[in-house]
Image 1 (cartoon, rainbow, N blue to C red):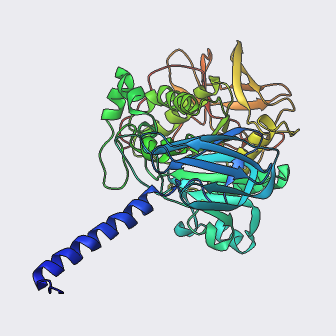
Image 2 (image 1 turned 180 degrees about the horizontal axis):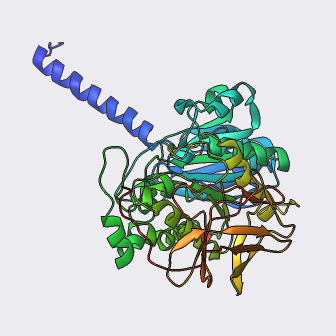
Image 3 (image 1 turned 180 degrees about the vertical axis):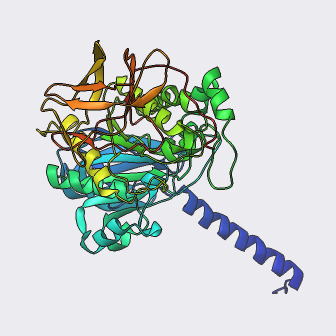
Length: 481
């Protein structure tokens, strides 16, 4: 005899069965192999290196990974935290390749290239793109299709703790991919790709306005009384993070398993609130990145452009601090004081030449290409003969030239009274000679040592002389009247 089941009991049984089915489906979905976005189709892996593939799955799940460049099958077992990581050895540049992952599910990553991978970071001048109506990149977009250039844009996010995941996806260079992507990063990649003839990837992880503290591990900032005090002077704003480590945790840390060729950096304007400590902070940031990546990779950066800040001398003090960081090995600084057409605009529109100067540094220093000139003349030493000061420079073997005008500008001379007056400059083959009828006993020289200083003197090869001063006197940083 069949007994009819009460309607209420039937509904309860149906709910229970539905819930069990949901759990089964959910368990299957969440136990599948999962990858971070930085590992995906269209990516570039650093050539001739050991780089990682990593992700999540069921704890203790065995995952088989096959790479088509050598048809080798490797395996890895997820740990108790459902995480796994496998290091792969990459060949010389080439592609496209596939990477196949098999466990309880399968994933095939395709259109993978092997080549050069660069991290591009900083604030708005690195971030600037077509979204800001930057004409150079808008003009470039119709001609930007290139399977050997790959772009990854890291979405803006913060965290008080290190993260494993970033928002973003790998894209093949082209008009759509280039919308909103860093102009400096793209032009840098394009020049490297053309000169090296290998695939090049650039990972843009930048955020306008951010101070260097937020790109530096918090413990590195907070363990230094000087840096902690400087960080405390950053004012909280609605548009970007200022807390030490917050951008590092969420926009740098998730990239650390990737092998990279190096990094480029365009930042400094966000630290004019306390410029005197920037050199220490910047050096700490670079060294902490290298330690985290376990590699002393090259780090090339842009000296901030001339701009009329609201406080006296804060811009030139940042530039001075940036130059001091060249004491770190495998660093390089490009000077862009000539690439500005409006010192009232903190975002110079010429991003292409900035990128080309960074690329030339990488081509010469990282890739050993023979370039006639890629470094700006840098002040080396001086000596005094009577009322004249002889100024000697590195990176000026062929001498100097004026790009406009009959006299070099932005040179100032002072005697023991510390009063600076405009200097007359005579160009000699191996030096510059500074003098002034107003200074009988000169003791100090300053060049382009002002917020908006732009000079007309260059190396014979056309690179601007880097700003400098020979004194260490107290500098006024009060508000501009």
